[in-house]
Image 1 (cartoon, rainbow, N blue to C red):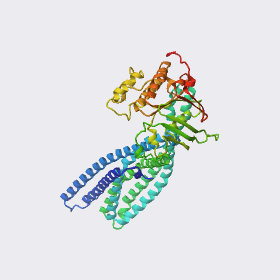
Image 2: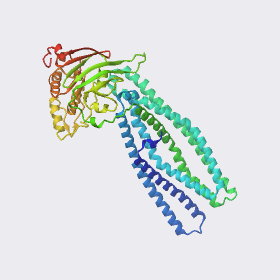
Image 3: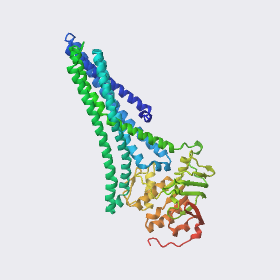
Image 4: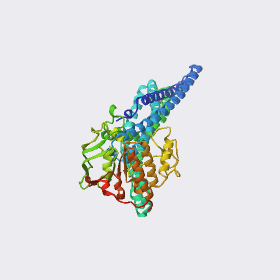
Amino acid sequence: MSLLSFIPLRSRLLAAAAVVAGLVSGACSAGLIALINTALNRSGLSRTLLVVGFAGLVASKVVSGAVARLLLNRFTQQTLTDLCRDLSRKVLATPLRHLEHVGIPRILVSLTDDVAWLGWAAQNAPTLAMNIAVLAGCAIYLGWLSWPILLVVALVIVIGMIGYRILTARAYRYLQDARNTRDVLFYHFRALTEGMKELKLHAARREAFLSERIATATEDLRRHALAGIRHHIVADTWSQILFYGLLGGLLFTAPSAQGANAETVTGYLLATLYMMGPVWGIMEAWPTVARARIALEKLGELDVSLAAGSGELEVPPERQEIAREWQRLDFDGATFTYPPDVDGQAFVLGPLDVTLRRGELVFLVGGNGSGKSTFVKVLTGLYGPQVGAIRLDGLPITDKNREWYCQHFSAVFSDFYLFDSLLGLRGDDLDARAHRHLVELELDAKVQIRDGMFSTIALSHGQRKRLALLTAFLEDRPIYVFDEWAADQDPHYREIFYRRLLPELKGLGKTILVISHDDRYYHLGDRVVKLEYGKLGEEMPGSALTRTAPPPGS
């Protein structure tokens, strides 16, 4: 896996141009060394020629360096943008069940930490190119001065590189351990944010969480990161000792070498001193490059993992439009099975044989663990049945048309997420339509909508559910699913939901599936479907369950 596999062609061309500019800048730096040494040792050359050459090389170096930095910044931002968009698109294209298996913390670390390290490494690319160009240019110049001395210098550099490589190998392993620990730490951070209320209410749990989870993970991260840096410092120290040894050898031994005149010695000393900056620049960039390499491996693993779970999501052209005049949706032996738990037990939903018809209001009931939420995920296409089939007006739903099928549903899940705007909804009268629903949902005194943006979503859980319901109404899909929607509403608004809003939707020809324990309203539905341990139980018409509900507000 290489960085090129993640970078589009247009960004690669920018990178190539930045590297070329960096090479030109480095070559000009090497040329300056040669010119300075020549000016110091050959007084017979034309001063005008030397001045012109010096000015030309300086101008070329400055301009090419500036061009390299400009291209670099554009390349870096373009690469980060493309990486984030590509990963986000892959995440959204991957089936929900596979995403749950990969793990949200792992995806978050890749979208934040790994992408950032690749960006920092990309920023160093032209600088590394300039440093390499300086070293290459100096090597050519030194070879021109004295090939025998260059061979000795090259031998010392090779020995230094081998030692550096051996010493940094362990540092790389520690940095890998640090990256793996970040996955664990992000998992705990998620628990910190989502379990905030529970942690604040229980002091012992809070202290245990901080000491046994956060403190342990952060200590492991600190230990691995410091160990990696420590081994890198040892390798850096080794390189510096070798480099200064080389400089001392040139200073005290080279003058006595055969054929080594003053110009040769001066040239080697100048070039060696000048090369120290680029060499240390390359060494100092190693931790960033190493972490970027680890990030690249992790992104490669995530990319393969996501690709392994993603099916072909292309929608057949003849099925792109939502089937608003559909008549029936059939479960034909549909079965979904979770992997076995630690006891070897696997929960199985199905096989299910049930039909939903256009314009029906159906209540889905069952105890905790009966499979209601799993049924909703299979119904809406978030999970695909492993056995059996789902058919919409006789058309089997497969991986190829599942995306099209999903567009038939609007849902407010029990663990819903509320966006701060009406994303994906269009229309010149969108704000006006949304405001009418705000009045209907009795939220117009708390929330305003302008240009599709909610003025606030800092509301109670029940009120946030009403905003989610508003979004669902505006989506205007053929099938609606409400998972325990009324559980957080007061009696007054439960009455509005069951007796006014649901009948209005049904009057528009919508099919509505409601998961609810409010048995006093079951009689309002056309049918009541019961799930028991993943199997369909008793099913009865709503009229058979007629009850008299208490007056509103009781």
